[in-house]
Image 1 (cartoon, rainbow, N blue to C red):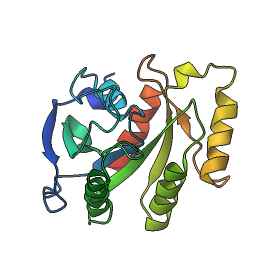
Image 2: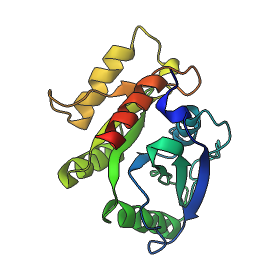
Image 3: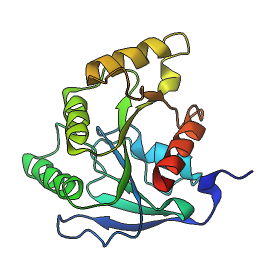
Length: 200
């Protein structure tokens, strides 16, 4: 049986660099958010099985626009610019914030927001702020711990518990999900939760 993300052709739709440039929604949207260099593009490529569809860079802060991708049967993936890149000029950081705020505060059909945090480190203050903001805004959110292969199986559950504690997740909320674009760990689970979110 085919994975839901194998149906239809995935492709880059457009990049938005101005707060007033967002397209008219064409269906449910799946949002990828997280710090610069947390692995959003690598995860997106792994989910869509399209190496190079989302550009991967080792330079933090490379993504300076909101990128939209068509995913066949699963609506649209939305890749937000990474936050927390201190070396970006202040003017650029303000532009990124205005761009992201305009998206998150707009009337978009968000099926789920995937908040990516690096499994090798505790979630940052900015991760906590975004998680809290999404919760208070009523936007569905799931935390993914990227680069889980670098942690090791013996420590991963401790890392999951620690991330949940730092992010203030309640006992009834979904726990952070460890994923690795390199090894494929957790990728099928993420596909399943996306499929459920856009079809519920």
